[in-house]
Image (cartoon, rainbow, N blue to C red; front, side):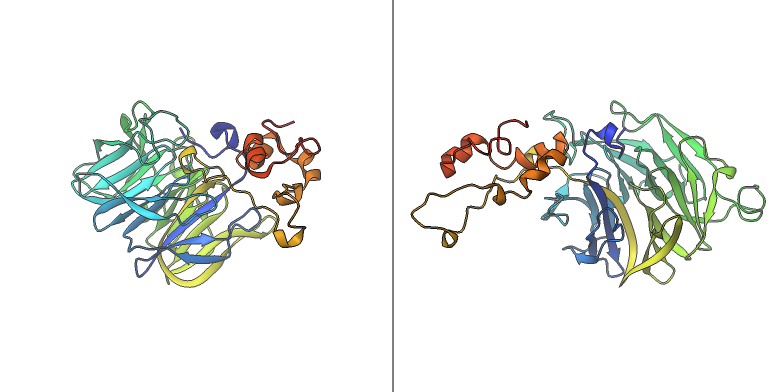
Length: 381
C-alpha cells in the first residue's frame, strides 16, 4: 500500500500538500504557495476546464470528471503544479464519482458498481505500469441495490464508502495483485446525544466522508465535523467531534493528522491549522465560493519521462571580457559551495546530477574541473 511516510515511499522529506478545489461555477483551482510552515498557502490559481468532480492522490496525480468522462491531469510536477492539459482516460461505464489513491483510482458508476484502475504506480519501472494506469476491474457496491453517496481513500489506500441508507463500509483485502479487494466490513458512524462516544441516540445522517493521514473524517447533516482513527475497527466509541465551523464538506491533510480543509454552509473555504502551538482553529482562505476541495501530496521529485532537459545559464557576456572563454562558476549553481556539507546525499544528488554531467560541461563550456570538482562531478564526494 502507498503511504506518505518517507521510509515507505523511499522519497525525501521534501513533500507538501497539493490542494485543489471546485468553485460553485464548476471552475477548478489549485492552492499556490503551500510550504512547510505555511500550510494554508498564499492564493488560489484558476485552471482550465469545467469540472464535475476532482480528486488528488498522495502521489500527486490529479483526476477529474468532466461531462461524464474521466480525465487525468498531465504535466503536473513540483515546479508546475497546475499541469499542462486534461488527458482523457478510456472507460465504458457512466461515471458518478471518483477517489484517487497512491496506487489506485476508484470510480463509482451509475449502475451501482465500483471500478478500480489497474496498472497504476509511480515507482515501478514496468512498461505496463504508468501513472494513468492501463485497465479496469469492477466489484459490486457493499449494499446493492442501495447506492453509494460518497467515497474516501486514506493515506494507506484504504477505501471507505458511504451508502444512501447511511451506512459506512471499508473494503478489505486490497493488494497490488487484487486491487479490487475481497470483502466489505461494516463500520460504525458517530451518534448524537451523549457526546458521541456513549452510543446514545440515533446516528446522524452523514453527508460527507474523507480519508486523512490517520483518521477518517465525516460531516453530518447538522454540519458537525467528526473523525475516527481508521487503523483498527471503527466503533461508535472511535468518533470524536471537532469544534469550530459548521461545515458541509471537509478533506484532511495527508501530511498532518490535524490539518484539514473544509467548506462551510456558506460556501466559504477554511483550513484548520495551528497558528499558535497546540491550538487549532479554522481560518478562512480567500473569497471564492467553493463546492468541493481535495487534498493530496506533491512529492518533490521528477519522473524520468517528465524530467526537463538539462539547462545551465552562462555568464552574461557584458559582465566580463568578450575575449575570455565562457566559464561555469559555482555562483551559477542554485546553491553556494559552502552549503554542500550541510546537505544530505539524496538532496545533493537531486540538485547536482540532473543539471549537467562532467562530459556535457566539458563539451559546452570547455571548463576545467581542477578547482571545483567537488561540486560538479559524476558522483557525490
